[in-house]
Length: 443
Image 1 (cartoon, rainbow, N blue to C red):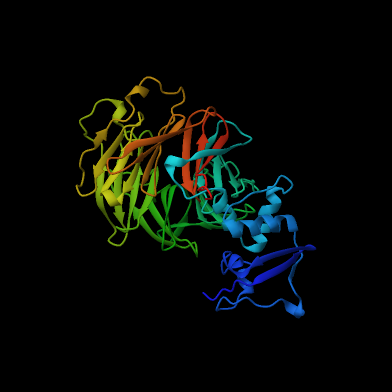
Image 2 (tube, rainbow, N blue to C red):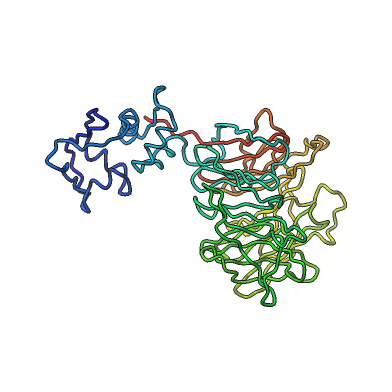
């Protein structure tokens, strides 16, 4: 890179700043400062034979951002409002630099509670989903509340008394919402909404026998080639997994439910990149029995399945509450209500669960309102929520290495990881926690 070390002057709002071309190049090509370089990374000269570049912006914020480019450290003086700094960072194309300086790369064993956000309707939170750049969305009954990475709330999305079943981020600008059908209303299904305004972009239809059908959409998942998967329940035979094009909104496929198996009521969908299959899990207590399967849409067949029908256990503690595929381990991890982890071999169709007891001391201490555990896999670390805490497991034997817990808010009903943050939604109070990894120290 042909970056010079020449001194560069800026006049920002009447204040003079001096820096080097090398420092400015740290901003990257897609930034305001990157545009000052040519294709060979040679700095252009100020226009009109001026001695400095003039920028009509806030000089206090410029000073903070310039120091960020120099050192990689973010220090915000008390006289600089954070929201104003973030606005200026967006102008200069440095918002990613600011986010990286505020919290480090995600590590479940180093997470610290950063903030708790309280809502307006206690007790009805059902789902939380982390956004791709540090924000999140929270489902409360028929409402979805969207927060940006600064945790500022955008206009809420109101589905007019249609209960929200699942939510997912298509990208940083759009969220997908699945909802229950209202009998006699002909609505329900799925819709794509703007995350910033809450406006409906378009709805996703289910076509059966060349007719558009009303339906209830449930669990959601996405694939890298812009496909959307959703569990569906219609009034006729539209029980199964639907597939839509994320860009056009058109239905591409539909995997109909086999007799004796449950797909339309699925609690969880997970796309597996290596095998190009979709994991579908229908779990207790939605159904009396648990069904987990892998669907191959290329061959339109179920390539692997497991169910607890006819299993030898007789006690309720072995009921599966959540499941997640772990392709690198050729297994599906499951969890029961006592935080016992179990593993099912993906190489054996219909094999048994190998249970590994983790927290027997929790027996008899379940909350009055049951809050079933959830699982997540991120960067080789396994996360499992139980009551008011989230356990982190690492290593080939999935050893418990840390536990996240806060002092109030009740049991955790859902959690989600994304944008280098972990969001945990509590059931007893309408509050969610934000956990972040502290940035590495500047040496």
